[in-house]
Length: 293
Image 1 (cartoon, one colour):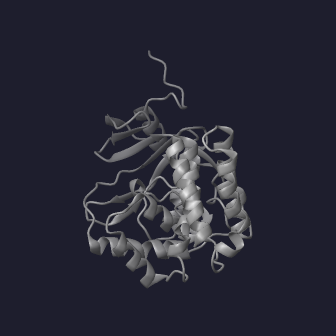
Image 2 (cartoon, helix red, strand yellow):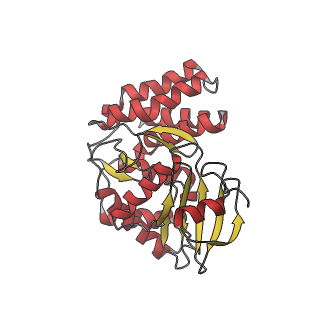
Image 3 (cartoon, helix red, strand yellow):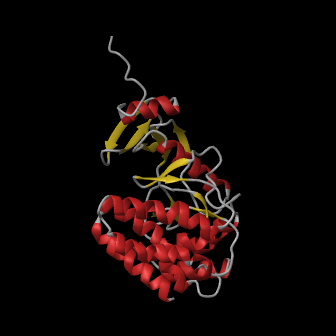
């Protein structure tokens, strides 16, 4: 009689899916070193993902449920999770259309306006020590967006980039000046929004019916312009239509386009830490644009 694999990060994704859903597995297709499509008994196909570190799967599961509670943008259902593994609904993909993009903009605006308890607030049940992609991200609540954004979103990644030698101290001073001037650069005060938190194009799936789904969140309470700035940074199909749908639902404050570089500092510095010098140069360009806006 063979021993049953131990539950944990070294477990096979099929075994993890069977354990977390309570259903036998009849098929498996690996998509990468961390993700697989698994067929459960009865034919249902689910996505199985191994977290990068203990707690990453817990943070993502809590984020998906928090976004789903809003009843706005479609989010894959969570079928099971533990500190190492996450099992979710698989989304059959299709092609986006201008009409679907406008609907996505409307739904994203509705998601943001459902709000959050505070800037930096984690999803209910989510850990304080979360992740954005493979980078650690602390979900620490704060009452003032400008102070919170500087302390918990910009400066931690800037310091690490300097410590790693990816950015020079003299260059970092430009970004530090942005943090010092945030109260005057940030525009009108906004209530905390319910953010996806890692809204690049790869985390927007277009379903078989063309409608948008959000995956892989780094969900937290934040400024709604941050999600939109990330869509601008990495592109999104029919972005003009997305923005039209958004503006019709929850118009953005005057000057929001000029503030896009300010909100892009966070993801650009995360990418600097993860992927190196090319993103450091983009972060410096964004900082200079924010200062000159």
